[in-house]
Image (cartoon, rainbow, N blue to C red; front, side):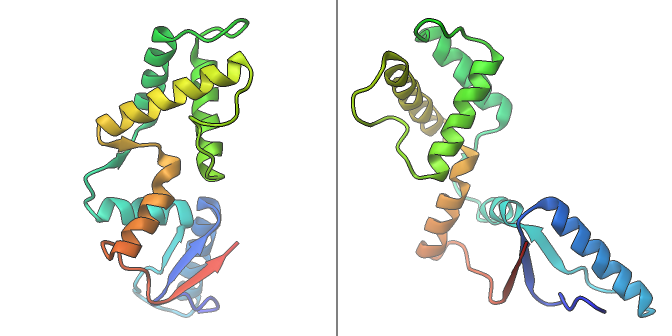
Length: 167
């Protein structure tokens, strides 16, 4: 087998790269005349984080896309944005994407120095969003890495013994 990926976890940057490596591994086994083999554990980092979190049977779960968008709609209906913004699916997606970026960069979406009416509105909307997710036992999927990290530190999730990172 040209790619020796057996007996180890291989984390990739994308799902596409993971599928490509799985295919290359399969082709290598077939070329070597193997009749059967154990499929190498090749997976994207995001998929591995999701898998580990799901396998940990934690009490909190990532909020599904539609639930998050419905929650953003309720928040915008309760607390309309300042002019010229209007509620609607594009605003809900923009708010959710803004939260994803803020989480990734570990910026608290609900706090900061005083700013414009729009920024202050977004901060209050984000505070409502996160408190309502927490009330439901949910979190934004962008927070999965933080939850898995905490679970590894607490011993609830075991880190892999051997791991290769590609891509």
